[in-house]
Length: 496
Image 1 (cartoon, helix red, strand yellow):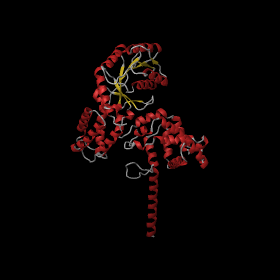
Image 2 (cartoon, one colour):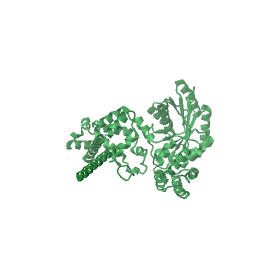
Image 3 (cartoon, rainbow, N blue to C red):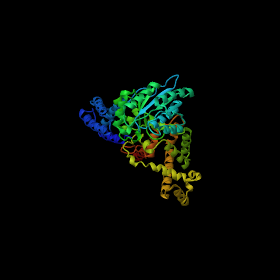
Image 4 (tube, rainbow, N blue to C red):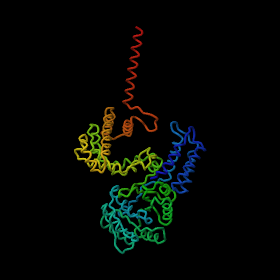
């Protein structure tokens, strides 16, 4: 998401140079390009106007700190103002005490409201240990009730529906059912329309009068851009909203709705849908989103995904196998499966700092599938000892995986190169320090950076040359000492 906006902003802000102060002329020239980029990303014009005015007020005359470029200073000001404009305080839910909490889900037809209702129930159960009850109160759209029942079966959450009853009666009966069965959260999926009309608002008002919801969410399709903002604004005028849930954000390359809805409507963005799977619903964090828009990645979300899918004991076991040079294709296959559980490569790369300029078309999502197919076509014994693979076995593996011997050889060569790199790191002492940190209470970012630099031959992106590692520095010191000793002996012989 936000690829086009990220690329435009990175180009504009990265091209700003100079020292001393951020002059009015330099700031105005950069902000004019930023204004065009935001409008092109379908950000609401009022948001663009207010944001540009705030950034200009804060940026002009700002002292540029040494070792920091003018572009980086403007990025910081822009980031702070955008986060402040999009942020909201407090939790998205108000949980009732002594009775079931009622959550009303509203939205236009086609926004993904029914699926989001099921996703929210799954999130409440996994994150807050709640016992939700889904209410199929959308009796306007054909198959909406059946859809919610299927989703409820997938996440093992009961769905309440009584045929022939109007939505407000269904909501009231569901609340009584929740009290009877010990369910502490009731999520009411209401009907949507192709547009906002008096009948839709009247139906929602009747439901509100009957059950008095503790939280009301509006579900909007982020891909509709300003239409999502306009619909949220119209709902807010007649229906008090506690938050907005933006769906299909993974397919919105512009991101105008996400940047606009909080400032225009006053209703905070509580959640964002980032995929089709039932677990693809995330809490909205303005600072993380802005970091990704500005090309600085979102390491926090990436770590949270890793913690959710990575077994800590298994990771420690594989780390020890790397140290002892016992890492096999069997372990590599296990890591690959874990990586696939965390999401697509495109999504994972978008969370990594410095990857904003990467063309999404360059990421081959099928490459992991081919690699996995090759390894699954091997026997467990072959994965544990790849050295036994001769041409006959490679031909069998290529036929089984639907690839060629060339692809099989490429995988084996890459794996062997990775093992050689691990040996090199072990000889330089980096792995022993890494292991002591790993077993002694966590892996530091400095250790990871050291490993990355060593793997890349000691080079840092943008550093203009190789960066010496600890082992290299020691070698240089020893050479200097030997040179001095030779010079000293030479001068001593001359004096004799």
